[in-house]
Amino acid sequence: MRRALLWFLLGATAAAHGETADRNKPIQVEAQKGSYNDLKQAGVFSGNVIVTKGTIRVTGERLELRKDPEGYEYAVVTAAVGQLARFRQRRDASKPGAEEYIEGLAERIEYDGRAETIKLVTRAQLIRLENDQQRDELRGSLITYDSRSTEYNVDSGNSAGSDGRVRAIIAPRNPAPAPGEAAPLKRAPSVEPPPR
Amino acid sequence: MRDRIAPLAAIILLTIVVGTSYWYSRMMRIPRGAPIPAPGTPDVVVERVVITQFDAHGIARNKLFAERLTHFEENDNVELASPRLVSLRPDQPQLDARSMRARVENAGERVHMMGSVLLTRAAAAGEPALRLSTEYLLALPDLDRFSTDKPVEMERGPSTISAQSMTYDNIARTIDFQGDVRASFISPPAARTKP
Image 1 (cartoon, rainbow over the protein chains, first blue to last red):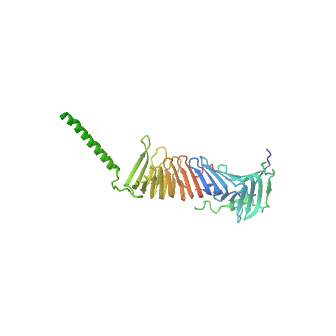
Image 2 (cartoon, rainbow over the protein chains, first blue to last red):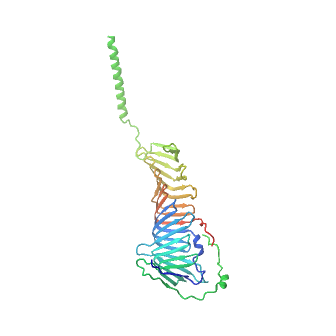
Image 3 (cartoon, helix red, strand yellow):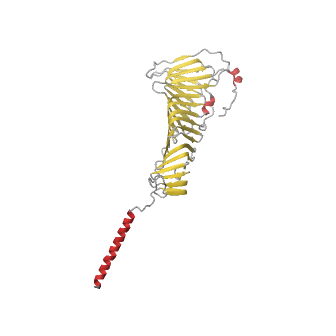
């Protein structure tokens, strides 16, 4: 299997990762129909599915949701034929005044609550937005985002429709402050999630 | 002469018995103006009733409470005011169903529950309680299935699902939702190792 693998940090500041509060937020689902098995704690939803978990928002045609015995959640969102599922998450601001979002597109989007990874599978595209301005862009057949290490792994794959290339556009950055100096300034305004 | 009277008497007696019984049987067949209930008029009304249903082994399966039970002769249907059905199966978490009115058809095969329907299932080992509310619910007690074509809200512990219609299979424990499904899954945080 021919694999072109590219590891890099999207966002020069290591502090730029997904909203840390997201993983403890409830999963909200909107769909046209759904089926839920009470014993297996697994469900399938379909028809213009919108899944939100904190600042994460995923849209697609079909959602498979399950929970393992330890309580970790797993979700797979697939797009309708010819469409792409869409993923969007706000990231903890890496610099004051900036609002950062990650947007992903793929035929299938997988969330693994145990590994805390998000996989964009087939025709995958990931964009980092800073104050609604597109900064970085990745394209490949498989993009894996590890929210613990904040690393992105892009795989060109060799599936149909893929030319076996990985494409990345990294926008030039403003000089990042040295981590030692920046640390005291990065105190979050609040530790507690806002009351629901 | 005497030995002719005895058989004659017997014949007369028999004739009388046969004739009387024939008259009685005719009388029973002829409608005698007894009031046939007009359609929609009950033949039996029972106030504050409790019915216990047993299985083949004589073990109580369900208990039904109602403020008033009304039976209709024309179709053998039963209508209930403020009914409440409680399952008594020891192997399954207790189910409790109540509503403002209910109609029981075909000897309990179909139960239509109407008005402020509330269905609850008690919490069991490792499972939170289940609560389902809607304005109409069709219960098929023998199949342990419940369905509605009206908007429905379900709570499972802190998680909720709402939809425009629903089918619930209490044996397979699957719930199918149709139309404008909105779900919120809240689970206690998994036992994660601290980073």
